[in-house]
Length: 313
Image 1 (tube, rainbow, N blue to C red):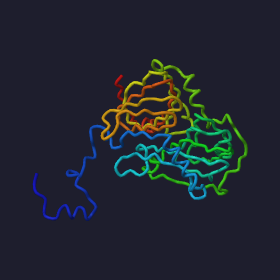
Image 2 (image 1 turned 180 degrees about the vertical axis):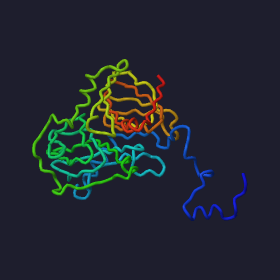
Image 3 (image 1 turned 90 degrees about the vertical axis):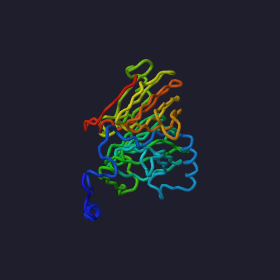
Image 4 (image 1 turned 90 degrees about the horizontal axis):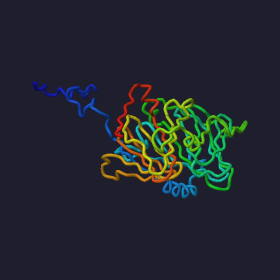
């Protein structure tokens, strides 16, 4: 290779060009980068921190009183995985955060919710119980409320990081701040009792049952409820998807390969969140009978013909 003229690269930079033959780092590589590490957030930690925040964070001050599950990837300040974010939220007794809508799709996983805890989607009140999964598809008005005398806790999951990358974020607060509740629908198609779905689902492996749900409402997020008998395991695998694992009951052990500077085994209990970013091989084993929710961006990857999977058995 010859020698560039003096000042050649400086002149390129001045014109916002970069030499494709001398990139600072490759733009094409043989398999996905694993720059987001797997991580485990504990519900007990989040609950204690949110309870304390209830003393000084009001819903008039904050859009939501929540704690973001921020992946410790260097430079990251928000996302839990490349395309998904999880957050713990608490609503105080007799509190009603203001309603809004946005282009990201969202869902909430009820953890400790006393009777009288609800979400409102387009004017319909949907009461929730522990273990329920409630959907708010993109651009649907939604708000929440807690008519009880106890604090309510749940986990929100959204595709906000994806919408950020696509530069397609739109958000509006409801013009009346709180939605008018037009009617209630306990059997709303936006509400799923995930554990019941899982326990009655077909067996896909010894001691493992799987139920997929919500596909008619969420285009970018796949939801599956997994029922595992004590000692049962899902096959070890890695995929190009981002996944968030949340035990709804029981406890599971998540073994992940090659986790640098940290534990390679996460023991997750009810309400915990475990992030499995793309291309990390992992195995999920139930220490006792357990039901686990898995949320992933698999529909997006399949639609773009970018889904790949390796199963190790």
